[in-house]
Image (tube, rainbow, N blue to C red; front, side, top):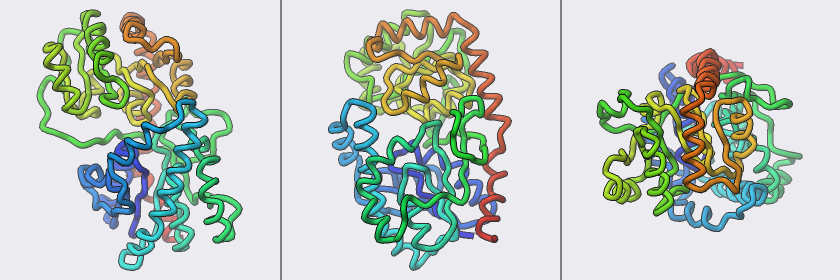
Length: 368
């Protein structure tokens, strides 16, 4: 069996599909993973062959991010249009790839529209794996503005439904009315580095990890946040790109900062502070760590559901100053109920079928 994975346009989507793609490969099947230019190093970093479907580089993505609307609805519509444009532009190179390496099944995520389009062209099954707890339907209105002519040419009223849908979210956090799906355990993955004992070992103080780096926490805001959290008497670890980390270490030497594999670090943490990113959220859930969501965008609904479940705190838009984040960390550290609820979610995740158990379902689609 040949399986082509088309997870999406960011490193996070690559990492969240890596476990299933690796499981399929370990079962003896051929696996390729496609992506835009920006994510090709991330695909190879998780040990998979990378297929280039678009020349879009990091600079192009950052330019798009800088021009996105600030309201969640507008941001989702704009993102949907761009995802659809990438899907349409990437269809030709994908069909050219299929001339030499024809997949028997295409695996994507619900907001990467190239997967069902390619599968329809080739007449092969489609598998959609949710990459986080987000509701991808928020992107569809913008996407359909771009996809409508393509769907009309194919004689389709809408996007083809998947033959198999896989959900990685804990069952208790699934919203009412969510599409039927096969559950799968979320297994974190990310590029690795040589680990040091402090990364996987606990010290004598609670540990708070701050992620987001140059995307959301930067400059004086990041410095004030790190200093404020450190004043709680905890160890502070900042997962950030090296240019950001270098300046932070120079100003606050006691703070550990740099590129740190989150799947290694997360189980040692007592709180993870982040911007509402799906991969960080799911890694924290899998590790049983309370979350403080300090900046949220289109993921606000999902992050609020986690907070309402008692596994974290989501700060509202007018309460996202460094001092507000410090207060949130203090509350999470001082109230054991957050940790207990986070560990219950981790147990839910661990009880779901691991990726290797889903390989048979994919094989049945192809064989049937």
